[in-house]
Image: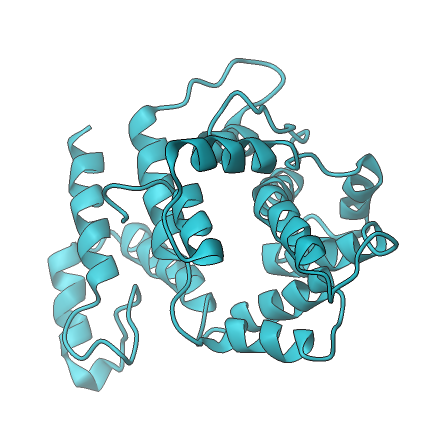
Length: 254
């Protein structure tokens, strides 16, 4: 699916158990685009964070804050209401994440531009500025979309379990997702992604050759772990890494 579908098609598949028809796909994409904006009052919440606040801390706070904006019209026992909450979260999470990044680097927020697709919109919100036009490289948006797909549903992991546990009390779904993000922040879960960045920075900053770094990892005396995609259910090779390896080669060629 990472090679032949879009992230939103995968989201539809996970929600409905089947891939969308062309009509369903267009309707689903339109629904998501209609929910990308944040209430302007929510954007003021960022000002309460330090500029060097961890982005996951900001995500927890802002996503949790959504529960104060969507509560009167939300009946968690109504399947239709639950689906609306799901659509809102799918649409707003990229906006929230991009604004967290912009806040951390001291740049103005860039609002969603709904003529762009899901991945393009995220990249635009992250890297465009009011001072100049940002041209989105189609290759980058394709790889970004693949990354979103590869991070989609992966069994009953810690963050999924956390959301389900919180939701079992019929709590507000935005608050439940905030709890899930808290779990995702852990270094044994989504925090591993951050460890990859730290590892790459260490290699670059110390002018190490990747081959030499791999040899250091292989030396058990060093107790250095190679960070990246991996899961206990895969006994030999994580298939997600295979997809990203191919994407990385294409990226480096361009």
